[in-house]
Image (cartoon, rainbow over all chains, first blue to last red; front, side, top):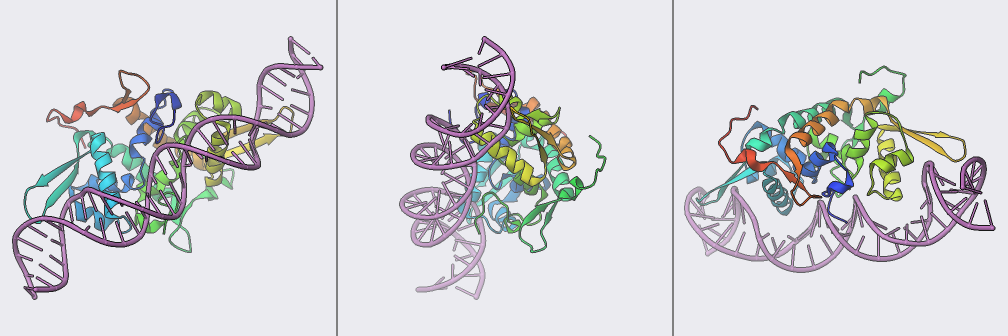
Length: 133
Length: 133
DNA sequence: GTACGTAGTACCAAAAAGGATACTGTAAAT
DNA sequence: ATTTACAGTATCCTTTTTGGTACTACGTAC
């Protein structure tokens, strides 16, 4: 019993949250899906959206998303090569989830003053604020 | 430039999805938050919900969630010790996100016939089905 | 004839995450 | 007198993930 993430059901009996996160796990999958929500993108188009990624990593994350059935890979037999990545119907069903993740990030995660690093909005916890559940 | 997950903004310029996932990253955080959505739980109560976790891991994940400001840890100076974990106001704002993740998992992720393993519902991709975006 | 853009692979090294096991201290229950 | 429950730590080890660099092939542009 020791698999990559929690890919064994025994690890989180009946937890649908981890079940979903299992498929979003990977350092770049979130961003990739986020950008593919707008439109189909070619390999190097994606790369330009992810300045810090290496080719190896981009390929790997795309293959994993493809294996999960969330995105499709279409190769056009031309030269130079042309490969397009797009959400599958199944991938499209993730849109509400991605949007929820994006909405929360927009509202509560900031770059710290020094730049570069993320910081969460903890201010909310200080006052005895009433937040609707 | 190489931090744990994508904790550098340069890795996903302006991507709020990865920003959020950064805080949910960790093998057990999803399940923990899922269970804390219902009610405050003590250390060993959580442990009983996560049969496969080790004490070390549970402690580690809880500390990270606490450091993020998503959960609170309340120690009652009694013996035997009593420590309660609960969502903070900030953590409470994650509920819609957790619910979105849970809804997708419920609908599209199953245990494979052999049991134990997860499987995604790829059937959706076979027919030329029309899925609403 | 050299460089560029395309979409990758292959190989090696580093870092991070996760797991196994043993140990702590107190009080109540058996 | 021993065991149980509680909420952890400490140490070591393995697995998984991620990064770095170099390399491929083809056709077009300079």
